[in-house]
Image (cartoon, rainbow, N blue to C red; front, side):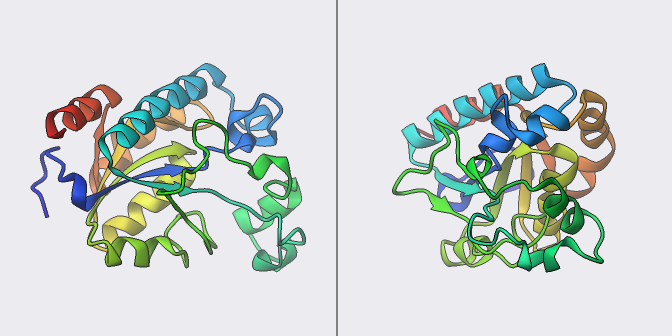
Length: 212
C-alpha cells in the first residue's frame, strides 16, 4: 500500500463515482429538486467529476459506478417496504426514488464496457452487501477515491466503512456535494481526517498526468 501522500498507484486504485444518476443530476430529479439547496455547488461538483472521469478513462484507471436502482424492486422489499424502519430505509420508499428514470446514469457517467457497476448494495455505504468488496479484493485494489452524492450521507458512509476494511480512502473534495455548502464544509473540516484524506480535482488530475 502506498504511503499517506497522494502518490497513487493506478493499478491498485479505483475511482468510485457515487450516484451520478438523474435523481441528483437532472433538473427534474426528485433529490436535486427537493434536497439540494446549493444547486450551484452541486453543479460544480458534477463538472469536476466529469474532468476526473475523462482523465481516468484516458489513462486507464479503474472506474467504479456505484448507484442505486430499484426498478426491479419497486415495492422496496429490500427495505421491508419502508414500514417500521428508520433512516434511508424509510425515506427512500416514502419518496419513491430510484424506481424510474431517476435511476438512469447521466452522460458522461453512463458506464462503459470496461467499467465496473456495483450491484447488490443495501445501505448508505456503497460497500454494504455489494459486489464492490469482492471486486476490490480480486483486483488487489487497496485505495479508493470517492466522488459523488451526498457528501454527508453516502460518501461519508462509504468512507467510514472503507476505512474499517483497511482501505486508504480519498475524497475528491470539489467533486462531491451535500445538500448545503455548510454540510459539505463540516464534513471536510471535522469528519474526513478521521477516516481518510481529501484531494482536489486539480491535484488528482496532476497525479494522473504524472503517472501517465
